[in-house]
Length: 272
Image (cartoon, rainbow, N blue to C red; front, side):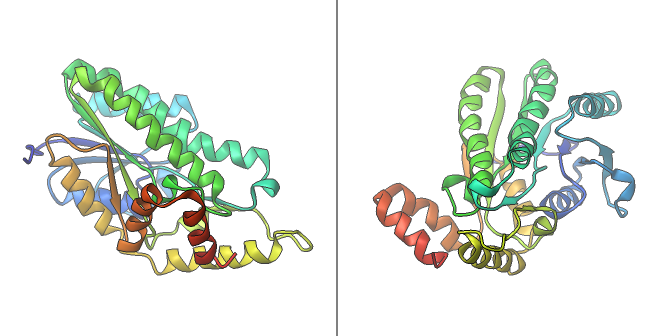
């Protein structure tokens, strides 16, 4: 059953590029009032929706941005937690500060934005929160272990949040994309491939494969279409997956295969 989406106010974190930008453009064409966010909105090209300053790792910017929208619109109907960063590298060789930065952006950031919008949604007795996670969050991938952990943590936290918010008529769900053709690789933290490192050969080969997957990824508009379907669903499920059939199937395989068999499958895929 579809819900009425006319005049809905949508906040999309990380709305200046990639998946967030595609979602913002797609929803704007369908009469949603969209606010995207960027750490540096002045540097972005012209977009068909408003772009405001927000850094999910800074509580003051979160509060300022949400207050600005509430003052203008009186409400936020839908929050799409999309802002995030990539991180790759052997866990042993990844600096602690980069690990903490990834969690600050991909996990604590969305949680803090959720905390800031909840009082406004609860006051109105309704709301929808969509967390953009990743199919990588369903499994520990070699040389993407930290990224997998940040997204997996958000997936599980959403499950708990859904039950806590049920009595307030606030819905929450995860949408996990596979590989899409975006610029995420350009902004990703890459632990350097160190000469003489015990991981040098296998990490370099895996890194090349990951970048190839992104370059050959699907059109981000497919994510935008999936997001609209979730918005139009009266009672969204807890988890949605969007991507190549094989990527979505890999999640199902993890549930049914013995651990060692699944691990061998990943090792073969990444040629490790």
